[in-house]
Image (cartoon, rainbow, N blue to C red; front, side):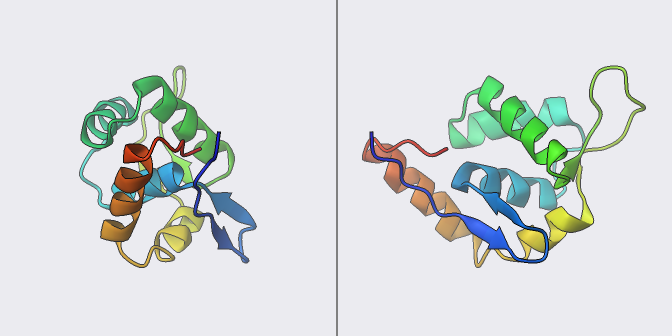
Length: 113
């Protein structure tokens, strides 16, 4: 299966993001949803992602130091971008481009990682 991906590379952080992860970074940066649980439901509904896939990507972004949020057993913190995450968000030329690429690739049967 062909995979359509646009990777955003940050030389300063050495992090690469798939289109879906870039969508998450952008959405988190808008500060519309304060908790990870609410955010997962919101993004899944808005973008047609599976909730388990969004959780997986969030945890991956947290391990990479891009986002911070509360997981079970941790002290309560809001869902936020780290300094690294903010730097990556600034690499997004326009959110509309990310959204349209995702929509076009999905309609053509491509998988975004």
